[in-house]
Image (cartoon, rainbow, N blue to C red):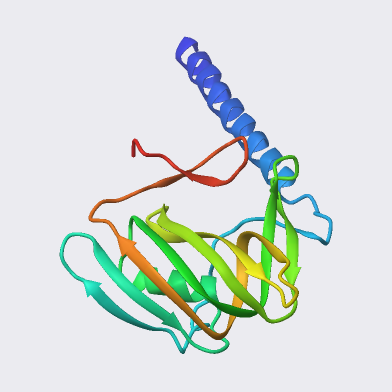
Length: 199
């Protein structure tokens, strides 16, 4: 009888712990699934492939750090195309800069309270004045993080975190991949994946 009681108590504690963890996970999922205002978007993995058929590249420096010239063609989608390039070339610790032009883009400004990006749409032809970014690994897969500034015909500018951008007529990007690995870990305060230099 004593053994059965101990097992019952142990089992009860295990079930309680699992139920508690389940409630915590479900609560987090509920918070993450709260509807956002229409002018916000949550960060997430880039899953689109085949969106940059005009992308061409050349390996400029094959030894040690690899440096590539990556040229996007008309109507290529920048983020999806660079993500696919990173996967195909096993990039693990990269940084890049670019210039060119977009026919449309969606930038974002991160709102810490909503844990989401406020959308900054660009719906006309613009010059890419500055574009910088990095690539690290999230759960073993390359993740592109890019910021940019674009110029309008009157010389005004707009910019932020690049969520998506359609190239027209070209985007010239120079990327260096280091012979090491940088890991991005989820930050519980923001729910963003940030570099952890210790990993």
